[in-house]
Image (cartoon, rainbow, N blue to C red; front, side):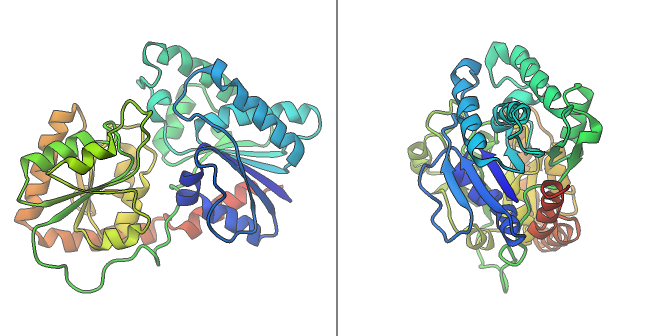
Length: 380
């Protein structure tokens, strides 16, 4: 059996989606991964194939992106895959249409799994990812998604029931062609709590995600400036200079209120060195992976009140939920939450233990998530 995977970014794939491919190989499948972003072959031994597929993930221009459709069509024509996994919106739209066209020629995959990790800046109901044209483009993309959803052997996966229901209510997808899979999975043996007591000193608070304002980094920085000297604030993450919502890494490196770590390869070690995670996001999230990883490491999390965040952060049990809103309001709520942990540090231990138990028992492990994707991709 041959399985093809199309994903918008190679490094995202390696961080979040590799276990499914390795499990497919273990089941005897031949797997080809087509990914945008970094053009270099993945730096690890593997029994699957990698091909670079140019994808401009920040562009929302159907004319400019038409090339992706034809490139995907060419690759899939040659591969003749039995199953196709499309991850994130742009591969879903263009790869999905290419797959349906190839079916007419008898060369299309019989099984297509489309994974939408979060509704993002365009497909959230009030998303403004394309500025004034957002509503029009959302409708156009929704029409393509609706067409794909009605095709035989096509199933959509979402990380939260909320996101799935939004698209059902919008008429984009059929309920019987969609399921919820809880995130991308995490290895609880690799992401495990630190041994022994924490090192004495001020609380160490970490933001680790893409370096975007809409991910709440602006509120985190404002809170760090307001509380400078009382806690240690750390920022880790990666950014894209072409993203107008992003921060310049050099600007963050010069910010005196934080310690900027950049793109960290060894996240388990960093998580075991901090006390608390903050993700005050306003983005159209699925289940943020950093929250799953932090909880697996026995860390409480502070996050905004979104369905994906609430899936991991049970307010007062595994962390703290703060109200969403404008960045200034989120900053004040974040400061209040941080002060409560400083005043009652025993909450760190109690909530951290509850957080790890929640991940272990809630189906968030990579083993559980991988089993669900294998069932969908290998289904007759």
